[in-house]
Length: 604
Image 1 (tube, rainbow, N blue to C red):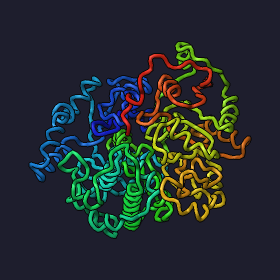
Image 2: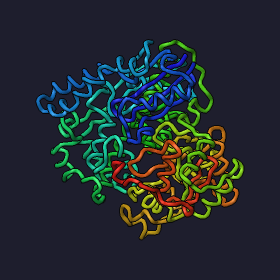
Image 3: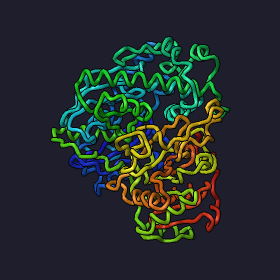
Image 4: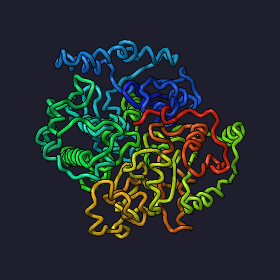
């Protein structure tokens, strides 16, 4: 049975193909259209999934859309009526897309796919819960989903057992942990639904000065983790912004203008909202454990991408283990919709897969050496061909020379993280690498940390964690024994001034609070990447390298060899390992007729 899952029309549209319960393919639309967080109907992603499965639309048995459009429209209408006439402008702006597309989803799917079979619409948070539970390694577990908003729900929890999911309780719009975080994302000058991870990265530079104010005025947190927000401070129900004048007066000024200088105030705000979110997540986790009695927890929804909160939830010990869907945001809803259609709707039995069923999240397009070399020849690109056995040592040596390398291998990752399929890699031991990669390669803000890829069998020797973290969704400290304590003078530095202090043996991936966003690399899911890291360890004594996504600021992660070569040539990367072809920047001619990419991609 072939089931196509689709998510669309909010942000991060995506498609997924499940065959007899096995995940065959999944991809976000943005990777094909080169428009970050593309919300449009994922026609390109669907075509890719069908192609990967070797079928056309007529061969599908079920198509599943990740939420219920009519229920979502009901929420839009009721919210408007509650705030009318205040929300008239935003209501008028939203209507065309609803009237032309969203309410006619079934017809669109039938026409675009030439499909006359069953079309299902599971609820938004069921899709998230399904994306977390069904691919997880657990036969039964509690689930927790948290995001901005679905139809009405913004948070839900329940239990998954065998092939069934049951929601026990939820919290409804407008009370939303995701929208609270987005409000601070907006207020600190970053882009909503895109810059939330920047707030998370900025938080360690700040002090929790505003925690009490946030808890007193903005959110009432109950002992079980449920909460109510004071909507007098927010504008997202009826306006075109997240926060209003009352919010701005509360925190002493207007929102920071995008791209303006970051101050200690923004850092303190980021730290404060991060602390509040962590408090809610931990209280929820404790309550869910008590309520369900389950020993394992699975997570999804955009808030589950907050890997700092995830790490603290794991260390709190309420659960023996937790598992987080790597595409935890709306893109993963496509996967959940397809899986719930297979297991719960179709009544198929489920046996949990050891490890998990995500295949390392390498579920996107791959390109054979023949097509890559054809492209390189067509562009007169000079390259050196390496065998699979030669690649690990050659790349290890280049990393050891502090070169920055574009790494394009195998299938593209599904989800927002680059995991060694479409990555930029470098030497984690280098004190200058964080600044070099931020400012000269990624062209992004200097405060943002880089993540480590570490050989899975060595993770506990370098980080304060005792288990794998294959999807870069858990944060833990660098091992105490590998930290370098700051002097008294260094400890007294504020904010970004701390950035250039060498704080560990692997400074390029050590954040200012000694934490790191860990990716464990496993030979079972990415053998070549694992062998390269192990070769680096063998020759240079360190099983940790930098891994950041293969893109520049504002650009979706590269998908094709053309995307990768273009990004490589536009930046100061030194080498590109494109399949089995190594390209040295110094031997290349500049791109001809290249556009101004900094205008091509809208800054996030």
